[in-house]
Image 1 (cartoon, rainbow, N blue to C red):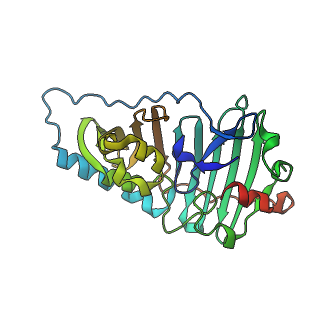
Image 2: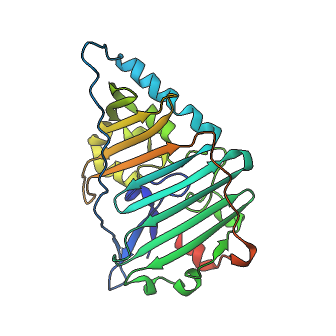
Image 3: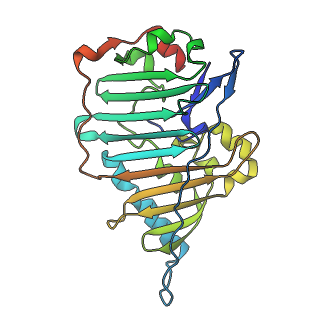
Length: 284
């Protein structure tokens, strides 16, 4: 059983982007499959008689829309094939939180994670379910119903379990917008165009294996975006086409509560245990 970046099925994000490979009855890892969430993000056409901004102006608006994210005070959600994530980042207290769901309880393997970072500490609560959950090595030490305190020396540089407060955006939207190859305004605060995702691999939102499978298609992937009244990014949907063994999917990222998110909450001491070796093995 292995855990891959969530962006292979979702996004996932630089904060925590694991993807799940379910184990079949023989114990061989196989990619889990789920229906892609329905995403509606098409923009409204600009009113007749009004001039739509030039493509360059539209791209500049989107590039500028990600600046507030770097201040590290917001809530976010991410979703893709069979996976969802939501959380908050609060740079003033050097804290962040993310709750991730991968798969469904009826799948062969289902996973829920609750990650809390409060510098210099990190904790994760793991729930594994599904018909093959008992085949996961050390599952009894993982399904404790408690937060497991993480050894920072063992998760440094691990994008599954660690968090870099110098790069606070879980989805890497700034990198994604820099990869825009064509964009037009379709309505008030609404945009549509294409992204060269091969230039945005470091964003963490699109798995490198998916980018490779896309081949030439990676240079022109459709997207839509919405800005709030203050010109800040509120939603981006990257429409990944089917390629190889990967089904088509919409990767949806949203941001809200700019400047008003609250600090993450440390888990109560009586709900914390030290993480066992099995946890680190699962995510490495």
